Length: 220
Image (cartoon, rainbow, N blue to C red; front, side, top):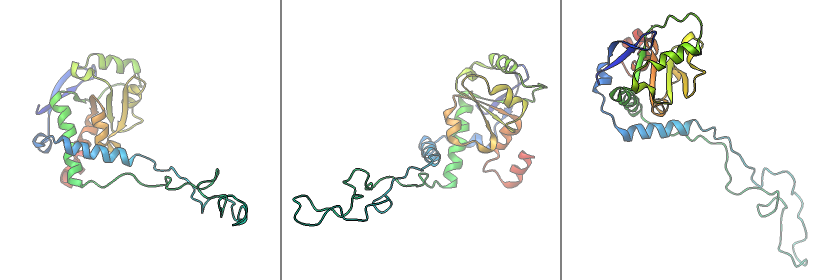
């Protein structure tokens, strides 16, 4: 599919939007998408698990008993790993899990994820909605009249501003998630079975990797 459906205020199709040349020409490469998704998920891990070694545990400065003559095994500190309350050997420490993925690989994975949705018909662009106040009822009615391919859940709604009327209307619906265009990653696109994007948000999404002049024009 070389174009996307544009949905009007009622959820019905009002027109089509052609894909950019870069997106239309992108070859979907599952192995690159897998590599980028794995890296993004790893980068989201806090990596805050921490244990104390025998050098960090408080106490244990005195030798528990003399070296010889007790009949027991020699011990130098009650904070050695074999003691209850002692230090941990090879335990986890704060670290960063995310690895490095080349920018060209990230770009191909990003475009490939969007292209996959476009080919399945599970992505559409929301035209300017004339909702004056947030309304979950209006958002539910909008989705009920949307094309069949967009009924798959979870649904990701990409907005330009998280505090907009559109975002506040959709956010209380079950299995519907809201994200701003600037914080979107490939893993978010792949996790969603259907995708809706405001026109301004879609322009930002497809402007990724484009020449700077085109990207600035799309975001303005």
